[in-house]
View 1 (cartoon, helix red, strand yellow):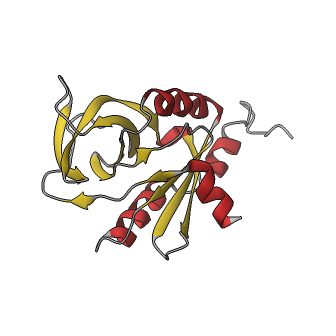
View 2 (cartoon, helix red, strand yellow):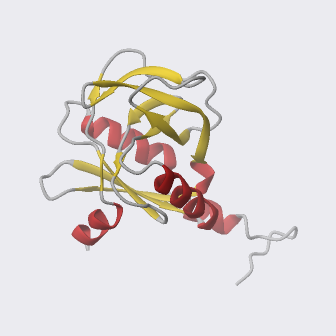
Length: 170
């Protein structure tokens, strides 16, 4: 099962982390945004390196925390920490569009406006994104930050199905 989940997302999030890594216009505790490893007009350059290259981040979030149903901690076959993000139906469509447009390019994963990973998408992603934090010294703490910031949104999604009387649909 673990190998299947890892294979479905098929991406790498191995990065060397450096200085200023925050954006000024964060709208959610967790965001996924388009990113580039070359200068891009109107995007924010962050001191977060993927393959030795700086990262520019889009001003607009594609997916925010409320779009993420759950974040499950695990490890890959080499013992590196991973977080498996599960998206709701609308976010799955957004991720499919983003990953199709951005094939072989990074997307930025931000927690509280700070970039913590920039996986290179190797194939289209829709319902599930596996973020591999590699073997850097802060890999486990970054994985924990992401999983903690998302939390288990399943309960929140179910609670939103309650009508005005507070009774949930069965």
